[in-house]
Image (cartoon, rainbow, N blue to C red):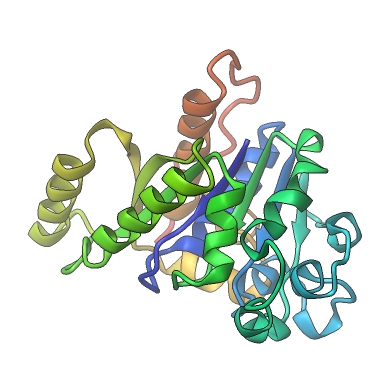
Amino acid sequence: MILSIINQKGGVGKTTTVLNLGVFLGLKGKKILLIDSDPQSNLTYGLGYMPKDIKTSIYDVYINKSNIQSAIVHTKNTNVDLVPSSLDLAGAEIELINAISRETILKKNLNSISENYDFIIIDCPPSLGLLTINALVAVEKIIIPVQTEYFALEGLGQLIKIINLVKNSINNKLEIGGVLLTMADQRTNLSKDVEKEVRNYFGDIVFNTIIPRNIKLSEAPSRGMSIYEYAKQSPGAISYEKLSEEFIQKFCKNDKLTRPNLMSKTYEQ
């Protein structure tokens, strides 16, 4: 299954979710490919790679017509591969303007390797440009992270309009696979109010798992680590493991979890 994590609003936990969900799915026996399609390259950094040292990146796939297979690197994380980003990707939107079938470049590449993975997860930039459109065309489902703060639903109407446009014109299989509440502080009335509003708006596609606001989740990528490597007993790690289990139950209907919980019940702040 090919999915993208998307929200044009920045700072809502897209990259954190791609990184940590991917790592926990890998630990539970799923073969995972993560694609860093964001010029900021945070997913690439978070998995321990320096974009300047990357020989072939997603930029080369888009612009230089490189085969995506040549851009795949095998990470230190169990069952997790990566197509890294590079700083050159910042100019790709302009360079793609005159490209033939520019909206389907990623789709054509992923079709050639999709059978090698249980899940391919794309980290999208905080915009609705050509890189995001490529991700919408290539995937079956999208996951929308929503921060539990004021203006949480701001801009989602525009996102849904773009999703419907792509669905009706280029990718009729596209659908919202889930909405994930992130950066929650459930001690506050604000987080509770936003959760209620999101669940009322999106209904049962909202994941039961809620990702808490947790300093360890912010620190881990700066060390080039997932939350499992950096602080596996933290609330953030426990939440992402729960999300991975819910993810498997939701999208792998006939698949039973064969791995025990990876976390203890000890929590770190």
